[in-house]
Amino acid sequence: MKNVMKWVKEEMVRMLPVFVFFFVIFSLVDISRILLHSATEAAYSFVVIFMAALVMAKVVLISNILPFIDFFKEKPLIYSTLWKTGIYVVCSIFVRVLERILPLIFEDKGMIVVDEGIVTELERLPFWISQAWIFVLLLVFVAWQELVKAVGSDKVHKLFFGR
Image 1 (cartoon, rainbow, N blue to C red):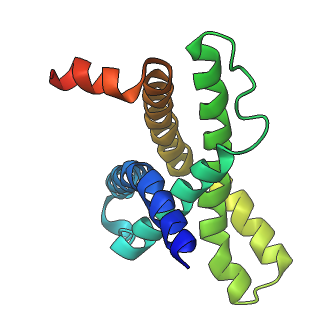
Image 2: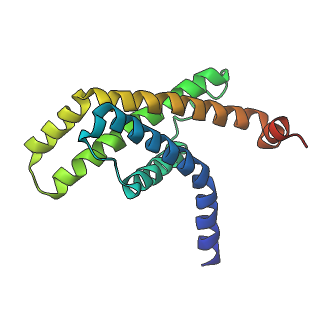
């Protein structure tokens, strides 16, 4: 039982910065979406953004253990940064579409309605504007993550905050 609690604590510590990052990103995306739609569409609730951030944080952590995630390990950091950003962007698209179609699935609307929901979501300009936000912020996140991994967290901390 003690080992399980230790593992849960380690997972939470690893997941917290990624969760906070995605919570901020999804909040910014939601604000952008509201501004694009004016007042015609309601904001996502705190719970939806919170849950989406939790899911994406776990997706990133799970993606990090995939065997092909470090495909460009021996190359300059830009290769690994772009590769991982691409993987995370694909995962974020999947999660965002799944978030929109799950209510249709649970309401038992049928596969035709679900398929139409997917197509409708992917055709919307706000979806792709939001995805562009996510791409740029993920690029920054992954670049920072790769830099810290290459240089070391102690050195980065010292460079930013001094002794």
